[in-house]
Image (cartoon, rainbow, N blue to C red; front, side, top):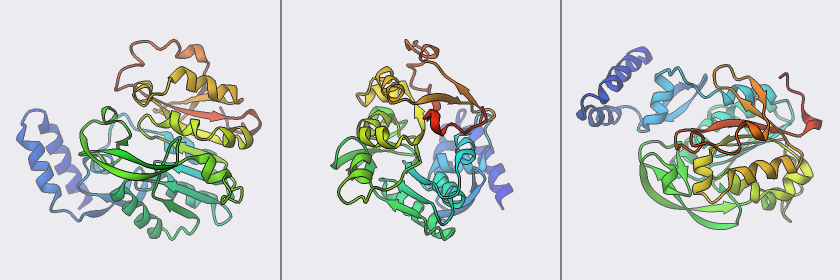
Length: 298
C-alpha cells in the first residue's frame, strides 16, 4: 500500500509543473485518504495529516536535500534530560526526545496551531509517553494573546508574519508565553532545562529576547534555524541575535544537512550578510552550546 501510494504521489508531483490541473487532482486524491494517516515520517512511525502537502511529501517522497537536524538532535540527547521543543508541529522531535530521555527526563512540547496540536497529542499517546507534556502556546517575547498566520498548504509553517509563509492562509488567535515566565516564574518551581529546539519561521529572535534570564542562569544547548530573511521580517536583527548568544558565552556550530555533522562557526563566516544569505529561500541550522557542556564529537 505504501509503495503504491509513494509511486502515485511521485508521478503526480512530477506532472505538477507541466499540467496546472494536476495540483487540484492531487488535493482531491488526498481527500480519499484517512485524515490521520499513520506513516514513516523521518524514520519515526507517527500520525500525519493526509491533507497536508508538506507532510505527505516528506513521508512518501524522498528528496536529495533532507533536513538532518533531528539526527544531530538525537545524538545530543541523554537519559534524564529536560527538553523544550518550540514549534513541536506533530511531534517528530518530541517523540525522539521523549524516548531518549526516559522516565527520569521530561519534554515540554509547545505547539500553538490547533490541527498540529491535535496530532501532537495523538502521537504522544501512540507511544504512551507520559514524560512528554504538550502545551498549546506560542513561545515569544511577551505574555498574553497574539495572532498567528497559518500556511494554506503546509501545516509545518506558521508565523507571526505573513511574509514568512509560502502560501498565506488564515489567522488564528493563540496564547503566547515567554521561556523566562514559564521556567523562572512564580509558578514554575524552577523547572530544569537542558536543551531547546526551535524552528519557528523567523521568531527565534523573539524567543531569545524572552529568555534572557534563563539563558544566563542555565545555559541550555540550543538547536535552531537561522533564517536572516525571516528574522528581519519579525523585527530581529540577525547579527544582533548572533552577538547576544555569543555574549552569553555560547559557541556556535553549523549542522550540515548532508551528513548531520557539525562545523564550528565564527561571526566572520556569515557577517556582514551577503545578498545570498538574505534570500527568502536560504536558511541554515545551528547548534549553540556553552563550553562547559560541550561533549560532542566534532
